[in-house]
Amino acid sequence: MCYMKVFVVDNGTTLMEKLKNLIPGDESVVCFDSFDDEEAEKADLIVLSGSSIGPLLGNEEKYQKEIDFIKNTDKPIIGICFGYELIVHAFGGTLKKLEEHELGEVEIKVRKDEKLFSGKKSFTAFENHRWGTGTLPEVFDVLATSNHGPEAIAHREKDIYGFQYHPENHPEEHFADEVFLNLFKRIESGS
Image (cartoon, rainbow, N blue to C red; front, side, top):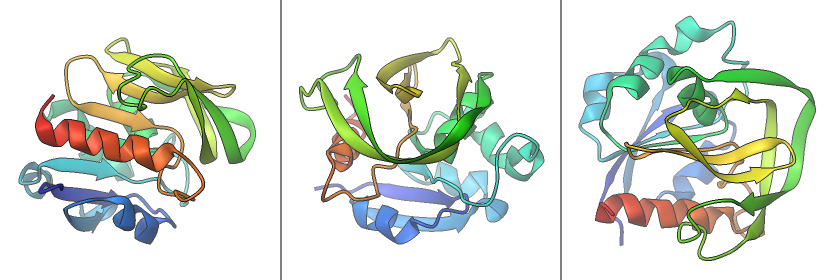
């Protein structure tokens, strides 16, 4: 059972209800333009949602509070899709526009940290994004990949994780929600 207080930043996702259903514990949701780092610091975990309102590149000033928080906090963070992109950007990585919109199921191959993925070597997840990783910041490890590039990353020194795919979408059909919940358990136990 999860007893964490979770602070969810809504970056313009259309999947907020699905995300809230996936989160065990007590969550509070705030829109990205009302982000308050003092409130975020009171939480046990911060989850950064996806977005359907536009790319990060060219709009960095809208998300500057989040970017600064990501760089400076010691709080655990999980970023999903756009949240993943915020994490990559905050730590000095680059993003690239994909040749075509990635939408639908994708085969994910586990590269590292098999325990997080319950020993699976691969699984199917749902993607919906137009941007991917250009260069990954050096302080991150790639945990899983697809033909499109990194799909799951982890900071080497902090509890900061990013999923390029959407664990909250179609959880009844994919293993991705189990990975998300495994991560919650890991963060809650501090191991």
